[in-house]
Image (cartoon, rainbow, N blue to C red; front, top):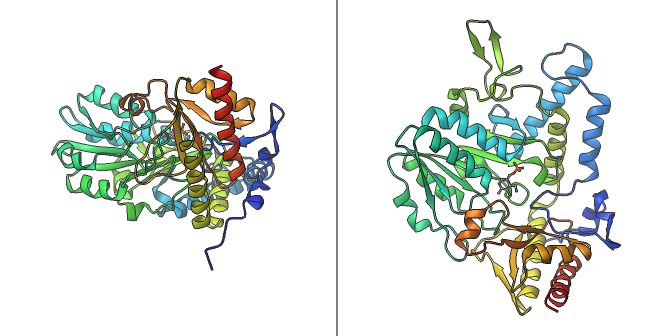
Length: 410
Ligand code: PMP
């Protein structure tokens, strides 16, 4: 007997938005790498927070404030469980972007000096590149790049040469949003550590697809966004190794992040609160906790098999279309399919697909250097998959591509 199949119809029924029509067609949402749709349990958790525990956290003695604080700190425990860390190592942020900026501005400013080096991969989303570029510029450090090959895989054979005695930080995405490449993060982190550098992992695209264990990965920081993992927008998390967070200065200052304040001396709270200045997204965090519980409650192996089957189906159909070229053929890929259609701009293909009710992302996917490396200045069309997607939706996308070829090359 084979492993149990994912009950896709049951999963779909949990997502109110999947019943929408777009331009008179049923929505085929193939843009989950941009943001996932949200299951009802997550939306309910968000509303329940506002309806039953709407108060500020950490400062009130009254019952609602206690409920808000318990919900918020409970969500931190959920995130910690999801990542394999401890709650004190989990900082709530607005998302991946803010998490990486926090590491660059706090850890980076404290440890990266003039003449030091920061290594990023050639695959990075701008959010794991721009903060490092800015840090290097500000302190006079060098930004090095671990290049990618034609297939969109990291050129690991060049890693040792890029890990110099002055390399302080290695910043790498676990899964590329543009090409789907899965990076061997455990190996990179081990080699970085041996060279004396810390590893910062952008897990925005990995969190929804891969089982995570930051200790097994051996990285030092791990960032992800709630909204790509079935939670609301505006909340995400940074996991940081306890001993690193303990020694890091605050980034933003304000309420919530202090122990005591006078005009001549301020002491800061311990992590994680030291890094959470101001009122956080309390109910978003609770909904994130609910989303991670929901995701962990699915048969994740079955989800991974379903997503791989959707990817394989789409690849097979697209490969049979003349004039369509898939981009990103690294040996290990997750739930993302990028392609270009000869003679057509990706935005035009995306617009025709939209008219068919099929939502895909087009452009450079905030990974311009990777697109430039592959000679794709106009970017690509990107379909991305989630457990609620069906083979029929994939077929509708492929039909839409055919239609785009018909309409746009007439
Ligand atoms: N990294 C990757 C790989 C991403 O796909 C994204 C979102 N497209 C980000 C970082 C940025 O995430 P956010 O905008 O939620 O901060």
